[in-house]
Length: 232
Image (cartoon, rainbow, N blue to C red; front, side, top):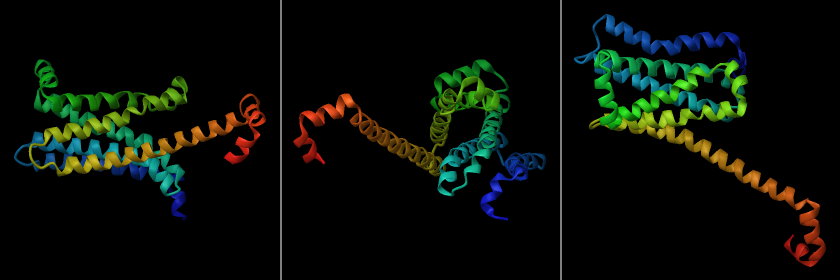
């Protein structure tokens, strides 16, 4: 089988779905065998937070990879990967609410207000929520393609806020947060370059279009034929 046809196969989503569940299954296995280290809550918090950022980065990588590799069918997996990012984000947030704070909402509100890394992490999580809720084809039809795409650019905010949250959380060893930051910046930089090129081409096309307008270019070429000739 041609490997480039693999993303278009219906069955391929099943093994990818199972692979996306592997981190939480391994975490459950370690919890069952009491192998979560000296501080289990911290271990679970970091593991689920790491996988949230990883799935956000993988989701952001789908668009550039499908262009780079010539695999347009990779887009079929973006929704599923984005939902797994939200799934691990929910596990991360639930660990904080339940295991760390025992649903003490007064204490949680104080944390959000007074601790910047909690505030930014909360922003990252709530930015993912509307993306998960509107990920269906029905919502695309309801919102319209353009508005849906604009809304789903919240993933950029969520990824950036997640990286900042992790960086501010870490006290000394910032290598992993900086690695995630580099990956996210690279993926967002690719988009910025592409949008810049598209904007530049639009400007050129607009200039070419206006030069063909009879009221603009033809008048100018009639009144100043020599200047127009020399410009070419």
